[in-house]
Length: 272
Image (cartoon, rainbow, N blue to C red; front, side, top):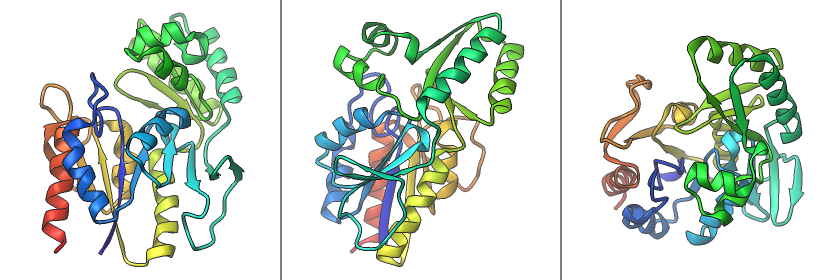
């Protein structure tokens, strides 16, 4: 059986507070030993993901900004597949809406609600660093957005949230709400990008089981799209109770500790 593992980063493969994946190293080594592709699928930007790709020495595709685009290293697949454009060493499948349009819509939202809304595009590197806990270099990479605008709503009440959602929908766009930010996106999500890439893997390998790991509602489209979904625990040792799908395996262990357990259990039980 061939596996492909799709994973969220923040709060899943990497710790929500320390940004470390140290507890997941045994499972990462096991994936490498068995030549199982690890596909990062996150709200992070291409520039941010490339840091982890380098750290993990990963030759595999990755998915940026909540399914905004799939970046496939040139020559990775032997089979033909459609892609939007090439950039550097990638064939890119674009599923999202370009950033300049998202920024225009956010300005419309700001002028339509009576609360303060701050997007990443309104902040400099230092402000992003203070708000996220990232160092300055990482904050600069987080601002290099292409398909997703992250924003915060100060004084967020239910009627305000409903009005924001109404405006987003009126523009034909979508949103997600993660642990720290809202995300304004196009007609894309993690699930659509995972399905698109999984179909290419199936053309390449034939029989295939897809695995997905996440920690929050933002990951649910991805978890719905894979054969074997796992939900790791959030800080405090709880699972996200907004996800009620009984098909999803709830794993004990916060973030990378739960991630490590899920992958080791999967591989140990299904390989010789």
